[in-house]
Length: 97
Image (cartoon, rainbow, N blue to C red; front, top):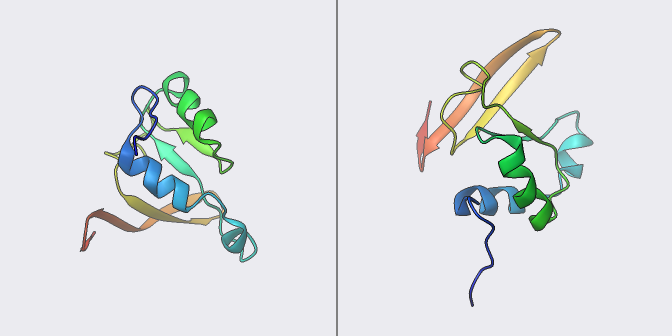
């Protein structure tokens, strides 16, 4: 079977995003889910549309760390009012930072 791929689409991101395409369970518990990408939105949008993703995607290309840091992992943030804390990050299988 050959997977159809749009130019620049990351296989790892595709697998991760596809498995989280429905965040209803999280949303019902007050948790927001979004996909952050370092790519320019005009490059990412065609892949998001092609794959039919419904969860929110944001380009963080020019955002400061830790939000605009290297991508390719799961990051979890806690917001308390206007303050945002990076609470958990995994960068490699089995590696937690």
